Length: 211
Ligand SMILES: Nc1ncnc2c1ncn2[C@@H]1O[C@H](COP(=O)(O)OP(=O)(O)OP(=O)(O)O)[C@@H](O)[C@H]1O
Ligand SMILES: Nc1ccn([C@@H]2O[C@H](COP(=O)(O)O)[C@@H](O)[C@H]2O)c(=O)n1
Image (cartoon, rainbow, N blue to C red; front, top):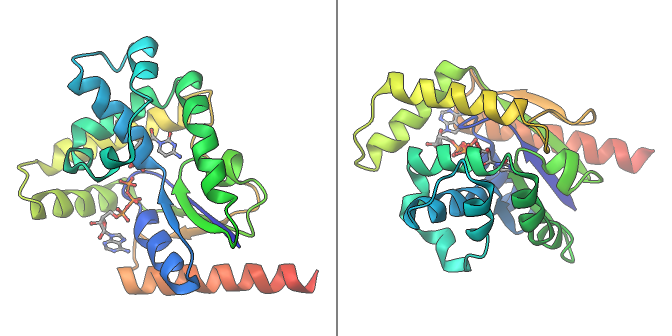
């Protein structure tokens, strides 16, 4: 079974994807980490995320890069959203994601284009969202909890800028797949959001079984 979970920054899609993976005993891939690894790689090499050549050169990273704590930073997030607009970067990361989705038994993937590009035939698709203000508060709490000094207004500004860049780009923009179930978590705590996601996935699977 393949489950696709998409949505904007800090909407809670990763939390939900992990919980679904645990529930169904499936492997999980946070595809945002791949783009963050490219963005951070560019910054660390002294390159410019606005340069497609610098971005492409950073696409060949090893798996240990995905555990780098620097990936959590807002600098990595911003660079990720810049490099992810280049079709050549998306092409370089495509097969790795498709292979993960296609492994025997299936998988849960979260990102921006899982339901539209990476796994258009996924068994269940969710589009997880929340208001920008709620998402900024959650991300701010997360980053301060990690010991980072960040201002709520700056986090909200970055989230809005990222939403705009991710939605406006021509290569695999952030959008809800037509057959995805919408889940707005603005007024839901983590447990309630996960229960709702589980109910939506189970309903989708039941419907497919009866078709
Ligand atoms: N429903 C919720 N209520 C309150 N906090 C939440 C909820 N869902 C997630 N969180 C918290 O919000 C933060 C962001 O959640 P998460 O990492 O799952 O979002 P994301 O959409 O995967 O983010 P990213 O865009 O970085 O991939 C985390 O600290 C998480 O614990
Ligand atoms: N499938 C994806 C996943 C991510 N991106 C880009 O990476 C940025 C960081 O992603 P997070 O999920 O960690 O927030 C994001 O803003 C996107 O620009 C993507 O393009 N496709």
